[in-house]
Length: 122
Image (tube, rainbow, N blue to C red; front, side):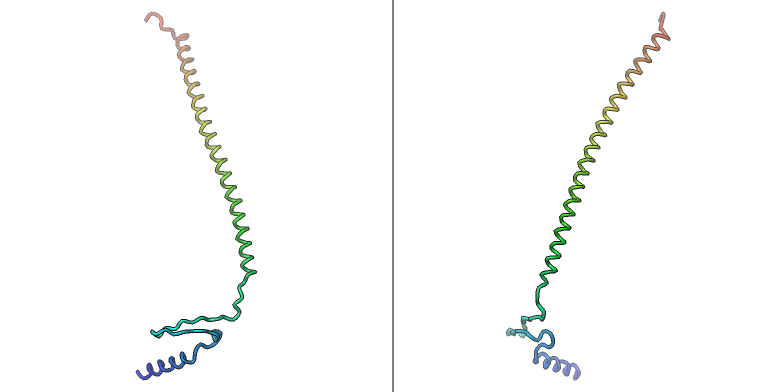
């Protein structure tokens, strides 16, 4: 119990002296509830504009490459769609030709049977 009181007393005295280290330039206020709100001024607070410009240029390059790839993909989709339609049409044409050939074959078989196997006297 005594050690806890000692630690609390030590912390209070540390807080009473204020911030230490790189945060030494600070401006703070305490409200009635014992809460402190502070504004801290960090050393070396310059904004890295050069790095931001480089990042922005890289983002633009990546965006341009992405747009190029997307246009390639969309043109590939168009080509694939055309090929699928062509294949479907080709299949339909092939089916029609097959049906026509099958009908002609049946007609030829019928004539063949009439010529070589005449049905005489029935």
